Image (cartoon, rainbow, N blue to C red):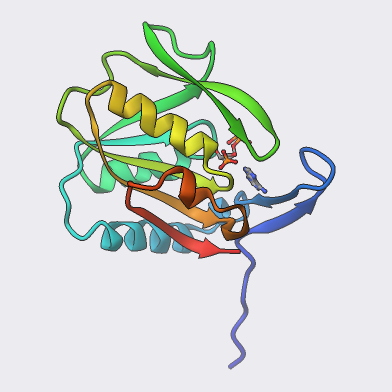
Length: 172
Ligand SMILES: O=P(O)(O)OC[C@H]1O[C@H](OP(=O)(O)OP(=O)(O)O)[C@H](O)[C@@H]1O
Ligand SMILES: Nc1ncnc2[nH]cnc12
């Protein structure tokens, strides 16, 4: 019997800017088995560490961060682009592969000493993940691991989050 292989990541050229090869994870979101497999791999790679909070980074980080939080019996905390969170926030400016932006977190979202897993779909230059880790640490949380579905290794994002354990499921 022949095995069919479905592509779970699409590549789009010149999006959102000329010269960028954009990795789109939306095909994976239509494949419940692939999603389940990814969640289980992430959990395995945490090696039974206790996680209190899973931080998901807007917007594509939200999908798996919420699934992971439920699986780990942890809370989910959104880190959002500036102006989207309603209560008091801390903010961090950052650079990413195709621009600059500002991320925010609610000031009361994390308590001192809580173990935090930071999740996003893509690690590119690492600017976004670094900003999210800074926000967690400013609230007194401990970043136990940063995990990503996709790592664009040629952009050396790991250097920007050196000091934090990093896991990624797919590398390009
Ligand atoms: O490692 P970096 O160079 O910082 O880039 C990675 C970030 O870029 C993308 O988000 P984007 O800002 O495009 O937002 P979106 O998820 O809302 O599309 C991606 O989802 C990561 O958050
Ligand atoms: N090439 C890329 N594809 C998808 N998300 C990204 N975030 C930063 N660079 C990206």
